[in-house]
Image (cartoon, rainbow, N blue to C red; front, side):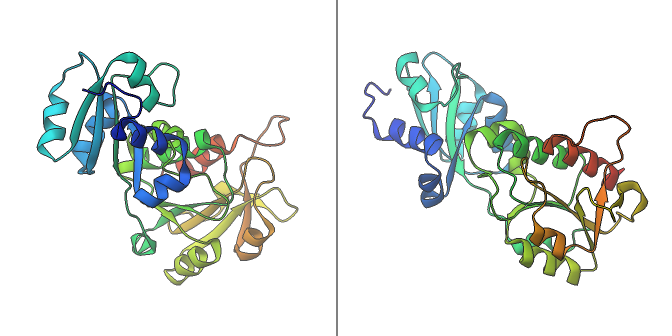
Length: 253
């Protein structure tokens, strides 16, 4: 039972929610809610520190304890300090970050490359969509949001535990994918851009740019071809998360 805001476990959870450098140094991430705990345990993620709201009981707590998690509880006033949302759920916990690397791209036929995508909500949505449609992998290149920040993790709805999410420089990723025989397309509005549904996507990697500036010049230079999502309306562009969802659907349909 935690009774002080100076408790080491409570401070550990709070720092994981606030500080990217701390998440990186510990190799852990902060997760929240029964669904995320169920997903973490089912996927074999190593749950480290678990804080339950005082009075909340569930079989998930026994499962976490059996797998070696340290269990704590706290009254609402202290429990809320570990969460980064206004209305916390019944459980907050830390677990080891999934370890994905360049080797996880081997054998993948369809990959999404994110170039400077900075919005955590968009990133979480993209990861959730990619996992839902069984995309091979998502690569986070330079300038992307931290995939293990609490907002991204929440937005993935558990996909963060299952989808290969590789952090790799764009040039390195493109080189590896091209050597594996994948075509590389960049989504960009340009005079020589072609509709997305006119290019072969069975073995392909598609680059999605940032919310503000789109695909970088470096990405354009590295791509084989530029593609667009045909739109009949007057909007100039789509939200990055929506654009990525359409691209993922076209790739996997």
